[in-house]
Length: 138
Image (cartoon, rainbow, N blue to C red; front, side, top):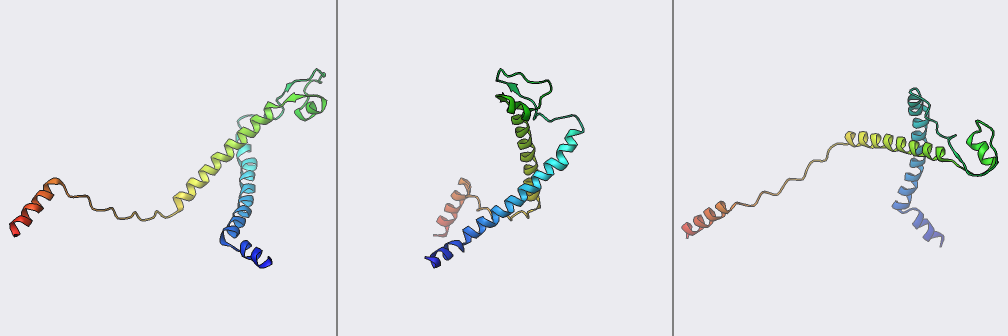
C-alpha cells in the first residue's frame, strides 16, 4: 500500500498540481500587495474610496453618531453593503491587474510558426484544362 501511495504521489500530474498551488499562493500574495500597496494608494490620491463603514441599520437599537461598521455589528443587526462594495472593487482591480499581467506574458511568448496551409483546391478551369491535357496525351 505504501508503494502504491508513493506511485500516486509521484505521478506528474500530482506534482505539477502541487507546484501550481504553491506558486499560485505566492503569486496571490504578490498581486494582493500590488493592489493594496501600489494601486489603492494611487487611487486614494483622487479621493477616499473606502466604503467599509457604509451600512444600513436593521435593528431598533440606537446607534451613536459616526459609529463604524465593526462597532455597529456589535450593537445590533446591520446590512454592511459598504464592505461588499469594497470587496467588489478590490476584485475588479485584481482581475484587471491579472488581465494586464497575462496579456504581457502572452506578448513575451514567442509566436509559434503557423502550420503551412494546404494548397487551395484547383479551380474548375484548371480541372478542365487538366482533363483536356490528359485526353490529348492519349
